[in-house]
Image (cartoon, rainbow, N blue to C red; front, side, top):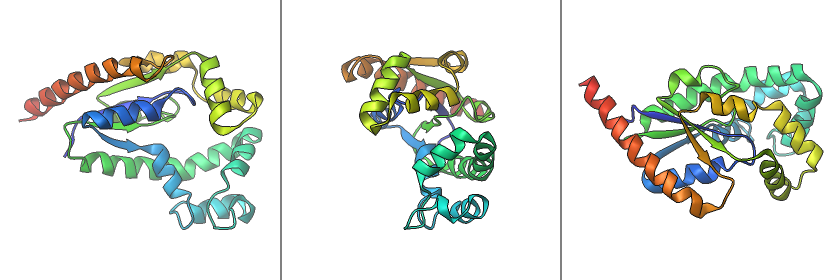
Length: 207
């Protein structure tokens, strides 16, 4: 059972998934709240009955999964809709992610939380927090290329998230991902050794 949790956060297009995968390659476990959210809003997902009863059947696609594009448009035009959606999803995500962190068998676990700053109490659940950082224009260009979204829509997503400065303010460790993969490897390896040591110290202190 893993008792050392490293929160991983970063804005859209910052490269969180790439960084998370590199930690897994080093031997860490990964609990990704985005993956949990997708599972909850998939066809027959645990959150779908409440989502449909709250927002109507038109928010689901033909398979019964949440229509993510329709929901994205709704929450960007109606702040109350975002609050309602978060009230449905966030308690379930916190519960499931806590269970999966506790079940991890590696010395430490990476808890990937894109909206860690916005979600309030994740600081209490994490022994360390990493912010994956890069300039805003790099984020925008990556998301436009990856998701084929117009720049205005990407900027709207960024505006709805915590600012770069807010993420850096809560971070214990920062990973600069403005460059390519080769720039990431040394930093990931360095932090992996650091977290192994800190996890061992925490385990020893509990004995």
